[in-house]
Length: 201
Image (cartoon, rainbow, N blue to C red):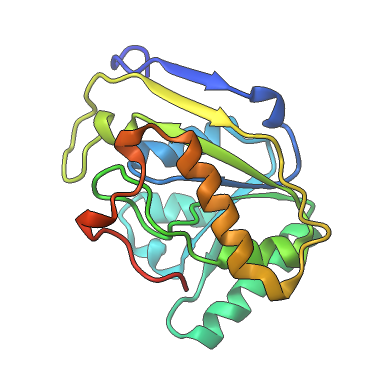
């Protein structure tokens, strides 16, 4: 990254060795490489099952034993999330997930889906937020080259979930989303006037 003109500043690295559910805002393909590099050995990702059809990356993703979920309908999605929670507990793994569910086109934070909280309430693992800034400037959407831009990855303190209640899912999602808003620069905070985002699901 330094050779490409993208120095990476890492903050809060003392929280990067916890067995946890690591979450990250998602504005560039670079996010994937950064979080897999900076999370502990034994961390797997989770993505929609269709990722297998992505040239090269999809095959590598499957060969590395990362998790896939079926989002074809609500029942399948719920069962996939439950199985993901069982898998990380059974195999003593950490998980990395992008709670926005898709990549932001502008770098601004999107609404969070609820899946990461469902997995937390079922696995009782803490959540470690990773706040990434600058990647949307370094690798812009629809571009094939990386531009020089400083990047920052900030680990926030773990959020305990062992006392979380299943009836407060939306409340927890909003709490974590607000945490991100407060730790992102204004240029990456949500801009409701732009109409980006969608309903949580």
